[in-house]
Image 1 (cartoon, one colour):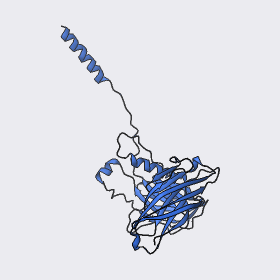
Image 2 (cartoon, rainbow, N blue to C red):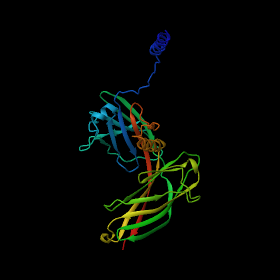
Image 3 (spheres, rainbow, N blue to C red):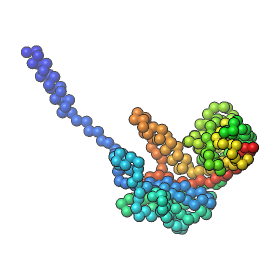
Length: 300
């Protein structure tokens, strides 16, 4: 009798548990295809924008190499002070590149991007060209460590404007076909600890002025190594250091995409929301203004 009683109790408990329902509502993002833009304006540079369609996880499983993101009949227009500058022209070989034959961009002026395409929501974005950064180089040294390697170091000083939220980037280019491989030390020379206002993305540095607003920021770039067959060089190797003032939107986009890339395949990591400024779509419409420094290394 006891066994029958316990079976009835157990059955009742299981039945009650199965009859209870907890409704879980999932906030599923809008799956409507959108236009994704990446474009940066810079004085004296003809803009080349990347335009493609967004994709879902299911679409990525089908198209693993993302070869079918072309948007047909897209119309991208750029405006300055409510005046139309022109329409972007699709590239011939690159399906995602759009060009505009205009380069007279000026600091302080606002630019507006508008876009439309069949079956896609219209897009809208604004940006403003920042002023050219106030920067200078000190303590530039170079030395040949072998016939295949040169090392050099320098200090770059950024004079930040007070009462402004400024953002900067630093990047190197070389005139030689060999691309330099840099070991960059960007510690704060004042205390020797890693500088939290500087983020390294690949070979480029991105800098926020929140910790040195209105002051001169000195960054030590140490142990920069250049690998090439030095014997075959002509005697002088030219490098270019670019210090750019960039918009906040571009800075946020770069930092968030970098963080998202680090956790892309980590299922236990907290998701990273990529910041963008394209209304009606995705991506970034930013601007920058560059100050360039030519660095010459004597190889003979």
